[in-house]
Image (tube, rainbow over all chains, first blue to last red; front, top):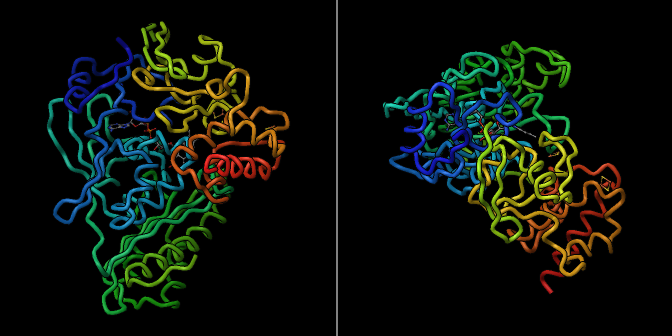
Length: 287
Length: 157
Ligand SMILES: Cc1cc2nc3c(=O)[nH]c(=O)nc-3n(C[C@H](O)[C@H](O)[C@H](O)COP(=O)(O)OP(=O)(O)OC[C@H]3O[C@@H](n4cnc5c(N)ncnc54)[C@H](O)[C@@H]3O)c2cc1C
Ligand code: FES
Ligand code: FES
């Protein structure tokens, strides 16, 4: 048989073990179906165990098989990991969101995949299981080997879920993107932020803008600059300047020039921080 | 890929077909079942002309490998009319002049059905989001939005 629909994680792993290395996993197929098609496919799109969303001991656990539609509509994710819900709601179109999954978004390893960018800013850890059922946990930004190239071998390892530390009071996150249209357009730049604010001062911050590197990558210099600064207009302006300066971007003939992209990184980072900070201090959002 | 038997529910009827599971659902519908209502605009998820319902959700049939639909329910535009009479959404498209060349209409109407199944009282913004994966090169979208809002009104009467 060449196309198999697995019913459980156990069955998917057994099938992988029996038929590696020729076989490949397929979730929604929205990335894979347009690429070269392998001889054997193991469809994991209907495995219920990969679609759970729950909160356990301060961590939000989101299954790799959760679709963008489900993640975007989840109250738990909107509340505890806002940036992720926002990112998922901006992927492609309703048709793509209905079938495309978070696991596929990360494993396809595009440099500015929306959900992946939010996951990295949220500090998410990926939980993987190989065909001998060994489990490993890796930070999402460590899953990349190069541009559009995952460090995970999809013919031998299954991504089970993401673990995200729930945002507590005093913390907030946000995701923003800029694209040629509001639907069905890949972002020229996207940015996600997770911030903690104590007595009006930034005490923790995770900041990601993409596409900058092959993997969604934190802007560490800008993060450092912002730590200990007060949550105010002056700081947002510093963030904009610093992020644009720090990000070494490439231009793309299809989407935008390097200069424009650099400019956008600054603007979007500053916007994302402001929204995340407002959420952290429990402020009212406009519109 | 080698051909396989795939069983699924197509427009309410249990069907079985011997086909390459890597063939797209769109080509399966058009070439093997002769259901040519779903259109191929781009073949890569960008236009929505091929939209069908898969287990009640709108999907691009051009992006779905046939093997994926085994055990699922697929609904296409052909399932809507009864005895040659258009259903309430199709009728609303006619009433509002939302059809020009008609190439996008099957996909638009399936996206409208997917929306109304989940949200029988959508506002204009929700309608726009629901058809944001469907391109129309003729109408300018306004009449389509009006047609879907009119469909919702009829549904709630
Ligand atoms: C028209 C269109 C518009 C799009 N717009 C956007 C957009 O705006 N933003 C965006 O970020 N993306 C976009 N995408 C890309 C794509 O839809 C997403 O990346 C989606 O999340 C991929 O998920 P999937 O389940 O369809 O992946 P699949 O295609 O099923 O899989 C992708 C890769 O991941 C592997 N894989 C999947 N799940 C697992 C798992 N659990 N364990 C191990 N390996 C796994 C597969 O083997 C494959 O190599 C778009 C795609 C299309 C066609
Ligand atoms: S033909 Fe499927 S989206 Fe265009
Ligand atoms: S009516 Fe012609 S594309 Fe919509």
